[in-house]
Length: 122
Length: 111
Image (cartoon, rainbow over all chains, first blue to last red; front, side):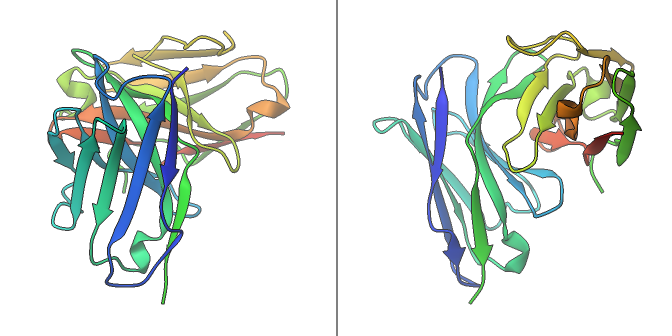
């Protein structure tokens, strides 16, 4: 059974960089038909795709965040990471990491981490 | 404004049937990409409920079903139970974003 666990600071100061890591257990980050994503949810609001990364290192970012975001993978540790720079209060959210299972015309998120609340405040 | 459109809320009495709609556009569902559904109970992560429009992952009761027509999809819940009270989200892949898009979520209230 695949499991994902987010880790990182729960409090980040405005203008600083938010860094989160997702550790995968029970499976390999290089599993076929899989890539990995970050999704965030602001309190009381809906879900927003942040970005995705393949085990090869290829990345795709939400255009609204593209200038501030970097994602990477560490295959030796079975982890992938998110860096979001110049954060503001608007970046305060629960951040989830997830496995995205992909086929020809479907990409669904079948495994999720429990989520981690990141608050941006001085 | 979410890329996929869902009603903000639906409600039903125990035992009844409710449906939740999700409408996409030419860059996602209209481009041939499937719609998937998630259930989010209070304080928990979303859970995959239906994938590829109408398929249930192992362990999801058959009270939950999905369908798709054109650029829209529907989630149906029959035999409504109190434990079904949650937020439900639809999701697809968008060719313009090269990533996932979500509906705004629908709050299901069991009366």
